[in-house]
Length: 449
Image 1 (cartoon, rainbow, N blue to C red):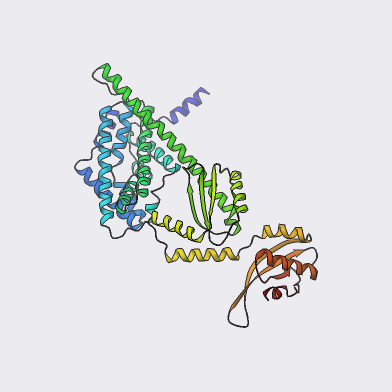
Image 2: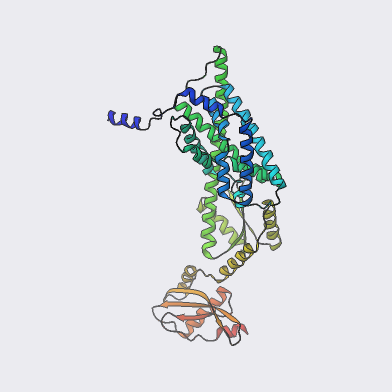
């Protein structure tokens, strides 16, 4: 057993293939500076990334991330924390601040002079950080720190630069400043800060795991002072990060529960949702929904609010926006806040959703109601059917095909047709047995008169 454990420990041992630690520290220190060539490389990478975001080109954005030197000072800060080197930490943070300011200035200037200021999907995706961004930043930081300490560097460094994506959110923050959208700016800066912090933390853990020796100070008093300062900074860095990670995890779980609720209660029933807005940080939380055609009564809204708890959506109030004027205003505000404009394609999609919602029937729900009135009915299928009248116009009538132990008699067929007209709010209904066509009395014609 001990032999097996020993083999496993050797198998996962990070000390194998490790570079000389003095050389590693030299490389880290040489990559944290942002003067001269590094500053020019950073500025050019910012321009390339901004162009990629502007034209929605993933390939260009990836290229910018590969040439960006932003990882250097973040890794340097992690090493500074790990070996209690206050000078290295201070220099790294100062250079990271310089790089961030330069990045914001260059990207803001580019987007300000750019004639194309439409909000592209690549920009939108960098304005709302989630829990997965933390996992990516932390895991990418671990890989980057491990690769830096290897004698054979291999391929991880470029992959880490792409995965952790420091450049795009910084450029997106510049876009937010250029167009005056503070929501974009703060959302993108938040994502950028998350990436920086968790790459730094993961580097710190690798340095501690590899047991890099702490930097010796001139006196024991200075050694103790630096140790306390660094320990305080580590605590300030890690504890809020755990809280933010928990908050983002809870928000992701909440949004998933909301999506399941909307799909089960509306989408699967053919009810098209036109507008959605959630407020996670209020008490109670709020879920505002607007629908294409469906109108809900007060009792229905109350029932939907009661159903939220069954989806593990607690402390949340569902608000259904039904007033046309209010709904249009809310949609326009949402569009304006995100600097978006509805295209003809969006209008076409909404019209198709409206048509599909009108043509779709909940067969399962209808069957359960019909069985109460007509127990012999075993199964049904309801759909709209269009056919030409004597003129060139099309006429659309709901058609119900049912399967029954025995065909409904004329009186039952008349009752079922009348009930369906009332239930579906349709003036005409065509009723058919699966095997035998029924001659339904002209209830529809009478209803039309």
